Image (cartoon, rainbow, N blue to C red; front, top):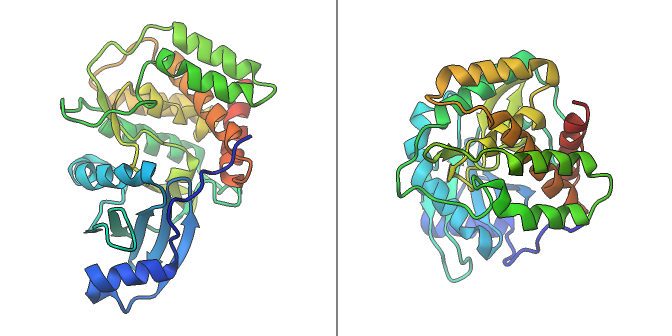
Length: 297
């Protein structure tokens, strides 16, 4: 298995404080606590009400810019809270990327950094995610961002998925799901808005209920099956029909192969998480749970 990519720049609480002093001096007195050093970003709490989101490697720098550009436009129609940037920052002599300040959203990830899972209400989860994706999955404008590996036909990412599978054992059920998706009819409609990275670490829950969806760095346009993989990543099996029914009420189009492609995307995400989690309990836990959900069907 692979490890989390190395950081291109060291980011500490002092880095955040220095950025605040230079670019948002009215916040310079607020306490700063680094909460997470993730795949793409360092997340730090600023005072009681804000989070700083700072790219930790060059490849991720454009993701913060995508959130800054598109979340303010998407958020008003979404039924769950999302981290719309309230302030932005620019590169400096000591930190090379743009960065954001977003509201502090209460709750914890469904799967936390140590790999532990929160209790969730199955029916409420299915309804909330179905309504959220139904509101999000509407046609995107021609100038919407695109992504090399999200929202694309599954055949376009065959090399990546096969590579991830080659690093693992006991993946027959995942390969089977992928092959079914590759053989299915591609998405027949115009591209729709996608979250692009919708999994249990990017969904916040409070007292068993979903309250927010975070990390829109991979926001893109394409096949909604990418996001619909969440049906196996997060929605308990007995509530999956509720999820699909809720989603179908909101979208202006449905196609008969969406479930086949969504299941294939769930397999692709399981392979990504399992193959790149040597030092990441959170990703490993999500990968195992998604693989298990697909195997049990």
